[in-house]
Length: 480
Image 1 (cartoon, rainbow, N blue to C red):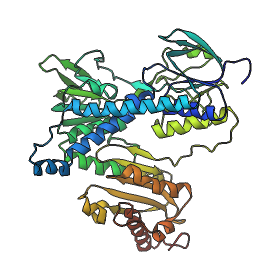
Image 2: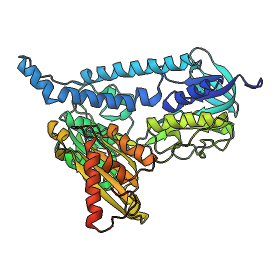
Image 3: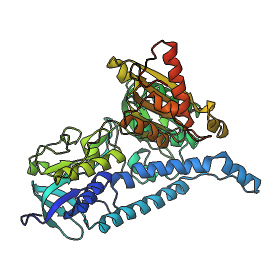
Image 4: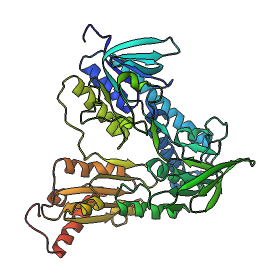
C-alpha cells in the first residue's frame, strides 16, 4: 500500500459483489475497508432479496407437500395451517445466519468493517457518516457495490412507512401480517413472477400485470409459456400487454387497493406487490465529487474490467445493470479486485446460468431460439419432458421439461433451457458443456444416474439426433 493512502481498497456495500471483492483483495495481501449502511451485512441479497425470497419459497414447498400433510394425518394430527409469521420466522433465521457468516468471512480475512453511510469527498477519499462516529478514509481504489432499491411506477403512492400497507414491494414483504386472499402483482420480471408463484401456491388469488406480451420476456419463449400454463392451473390470472395508470389504497377494514390500467380495466385486491424495476442506490454518494455521473436509473457505466470513467473507481453488481444476479455480482466483484491489483483473471463470459426460483423453477444458459433465429444461426432442438423420465414418474412431476439447442452443422451446444424441480441445479451440466465447447456427441455417449432428472439430457440429445436425421442435416461433426 502506498504511504499516501490509509487503505488499498474501500468497498461501498456488503452484498455479494462487495464482500467478494473485499475478500479477494484481502487474499492478495491488500488493506481493505468495507462500509455498509445497514445494521446487518450481506446487502439486499441477504436481507431483502435473493435469500429471503428463496427461503420463503422452500418454506412454502416444504409445508405444502402432500407427503407432510399425509404423515400428520396418519399420526392423528391436524394438517398444518400455514401463517405468514410461521413463514417469515423461517426467513429471519436463515437471513440472520447468512449475515453472520458474511461478517465472519470478512473479519477472518482481515477486512475492516465499518457501519455507516459512505460518500465521496474526492476520487481517493470517502467520508463515512456513522452512528459510531464520522470518519474519513483515504484509499488507492474504491469499489461501488451499493445495490438497488425498488422503483414505484407513476401513479403509485409510497406506503413504505405504514404499519399494515396494502401496497408493498419485494423489499418489505415481511410487513404482511397474514396471507392475503387476493393479490395484484405489478411487473412480470424475475422478482414479480417469483413472488406471484409463491402466493399462488399458498392459495392466494393472484393477478399479474405485465407491460410486455409475456413475463420474463428475455428468456426462452417456449419455457415461459410452459411456466404460464403451470401457474394458470393455480388460478393465477395474467394480464400481459397492459400498463398501470393508477394505484389507489382504499381505507376499508382490512385495507384494500384499487388498480386501474391504461386500457380502462379496474381490479381490486387485498395487496398490490410492486416489482416494476429497480433504481441504483447512488443518492447521497456525492458522485459529482468523484467526477462521476449515474444514468436515469442510478446505474454506473463500466468497461470490461468493471472500471468506471475514473481510473481508480470500479463498480459491480446491480448498480451496473443486467444481469444483476447474486452469482454474477460476486464473480464481478472478484474479477474487479483482480484487475485493480494486476492479478490475472478470466472474464465472466456469456455462459453463466440464469435461475428463476418461481414455482415451478426455471433456469437456462446460452442462447435462446429467438436470439439464434434473429441472428440467422442454423440450429436444431431436442426436448425431454419430466413426465417421460423415470424420476419424473416417481415424483409425479408433469410440468417439467428440458430443451437443448445445437448448431445444425457443427452440433455444438448453443443453449440449455429447463423448467421444473431441480432446474437451477440441473442447468450446470449444460453450462459446463457450453463453456467447454461440447457437442451433441457428449450427451449421446455420456451415462447418467438412473433414475434422475439428469437423464433428460440423454433423452433430449437423442431427440435432437433424431430431428437432425429426419431433416437430413446430420453430418460428421459431433455425430454419434
